[in-house]
Length: 228
Image 1: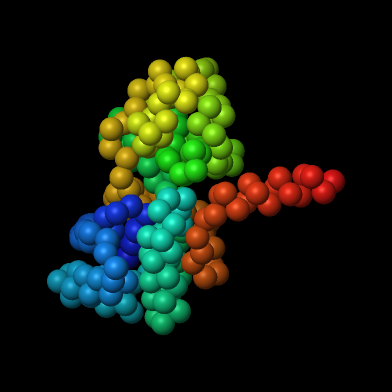
Image 2: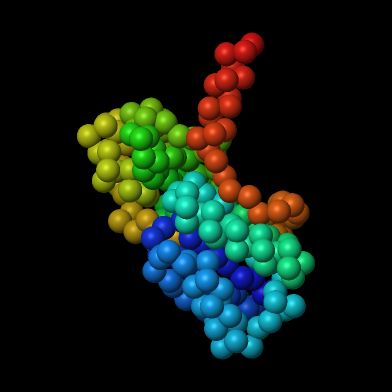
């Protein structure tokens, strides 16, 4: 199986090609012409590994939440390549991606992923390791004030994400006391792991690549609740 991965949710864009479990990676520092840079570096990466778009089975992208502008660039490139070459795409939550990386580095099976959502809020989600070695969401991913993050102390949680640095004094005591993974950037190896699991389970969206707007989902839910 050949997978092409694109992540632009942080200031550094990550590109990768997985060829039958062998992974090749390239990075790009974000700039004003990120789209052009992605296409150029991607072309070079594919050329160096003798891969053409007709060889690619799936495009893998990070749907967010995260850097809104960067995520849109990555998704736009994925959309364009998917439509131009008829390649299906697999979207991955950036929170799930961080949780997967925390498991790989720390062997943590219960992970709280929490990142700064700006405006004094945090994107967060709780994840548990399934039998196939992939972190799965335990409930919906959310956006809230830092002190609204809820975990159960019946599990041995590990934290990952920059919420603990940016909002440490505002987090609950239980969350502050967690062990936190100091690495919270997306990594292509974890994108591939999650994508392969989704593909095998046929848990992929056959439609166009789309961003994940948690804040908009929450706002819509609140509006619907008030209308009842």
